[in-house]
Length: 278
Image 1 (cartoon, one colour):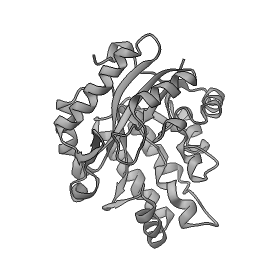
Image 2 (tube, helix red, strand yellow):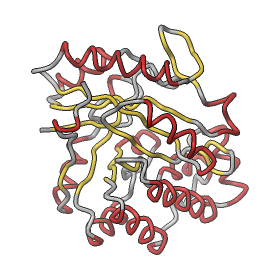
Image 3 (cartoon, helix red, strand yellow):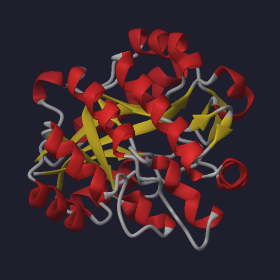
């Protein structure tokens, strides 16, 4: 019963492929559940850059009505495929302390099945953009950036706004470009222990995100050592996400991911029928 719970259809402006394209690939790959998680980035300082989605082939400002339309379309197509695959609707929400009130406001008025909280912005810089991340990493160093990243992720966990934390060590996305000879990640068990404590306190699901391999990394988000700390701390469930921005990457490397989570002793998370938004 495989589930890919982190998928970006073309509503995300950095993605391509329509809803049905992703669904057909998911069925071909034997997935039983998927969740579309279009980007919603509400960082106030970057409204003119990031706060957009794609509707009807046009890039438009992401307001509540546009997000509701995205939700309506996913719900509509989920009915068409009911009995073949369980299609859910969610959002990947870019967390920042400054955006908290706007995030709360959106989530009050938009009904979705899954809320992924992710850190995309640090000090106004998009660490998920190679153009911005590489010079930022080189200027400040990996230890400093990782520290800021985890501080933000801890605040996201404490907010109580999310079901899943996305790409736990996502700061390393472009570290191979910034530092070709390494290191590619910063290892500090104290930082992770603090995050794990908040996840346990707020019943948050960890995500195993396979897209790190597309950026040249040998491990997923997060690396194995973090997963080992998570299972030791009492984290029991893990959500699998391809973070696919193209249909061909749905369920990407899930065979390896499933082998890893089974080896470590995690239970794979699925969205329950009780939480279905119809």
